[in-house]
Image (cartoon, rainbow, N blue to C red; front, side, top):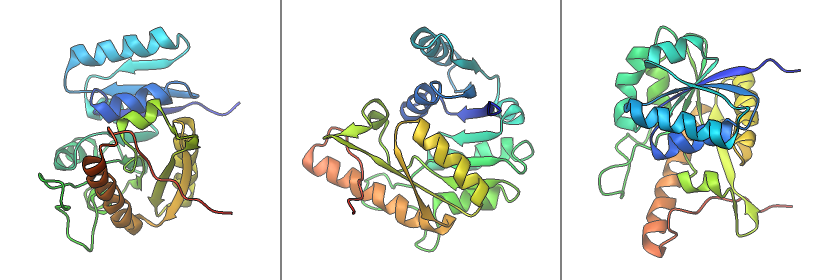
Length: 220
């Protein structure tokens, strides 16, 4: 049997963080959840255990504690909060997989706050030079985790990163979460992925997708 990996979800009480936590709790993982509101965190843990008594999940006291025990760290926090969290986990994230899910959106959703020659994931990699930063889950809405099959088709979830072993591990993780994983390329491809989600948000606002929409590559 495969060794159970430990995943720390930082920002677990947010919409996307709780959605990721619930879906990954169904897999062969141990989850350490960290959120800013302890009462909401305890409610989430209880909710997960109620729906799946076999789930290996617990609340963590702080990001560093969660990261220390984890093999994989998921930063389910907004782009603006990543710098502060990265400082707290830098030492414990050494040589570990750190998943960037954020999109660096501006306040009016008509552009990104990052320069064209970088991305949120690449900026996180600069902050965590000794970690294996992987982009994943940024092209999926929180509602997609409850309904990953939309209009009869399983939503694709794109992954980008520079470490082959880390990409394979995250591919399995994305599949466990309910999506069709597609490795899109090196970490610099995150620039495209973040722009893709910006476009999907804009289209959702224009055509009222009600935050349930996703990307699907159709091919032979």
